[in-house]
Length: 169
Image (tube, rainbow, N blue to C red):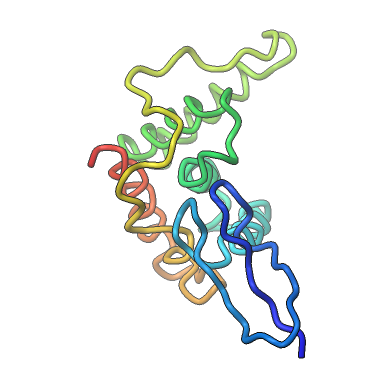
């Protein structure tokens, strides 16, 4: 009998299973966000985002920051303040503010601008997991793993709010 158990190491990959024989299937929670199968869910969400269809595509600029802020060990140091800028823009002004921030980031990332990122963001939390974990993760946004369109925008807003709140607590 072959079963799957997921690795659960700090900063590790929670969805890449290792095979064992003679054991019951074990699915452990991600050491970063606390969800099960978060990497698999993120891959599914990215496929929906890149379809550019409503409601998924327009919210890519906030779901990627939510995911990487909840997985700080996987996000590049140079991206940390960018993720916070995008999250804060969305929370302050919704998709219109997020679109404006995305356009600004695209312009700054141009080779004509030397690939510069946004100016430093004030009050960016230290790049480490928050003390109290996350109330909402990608698993809640996914519902049954399919990221249903109905209620998706509300679930993303809850995820964004919970991600930001984790560092305030």
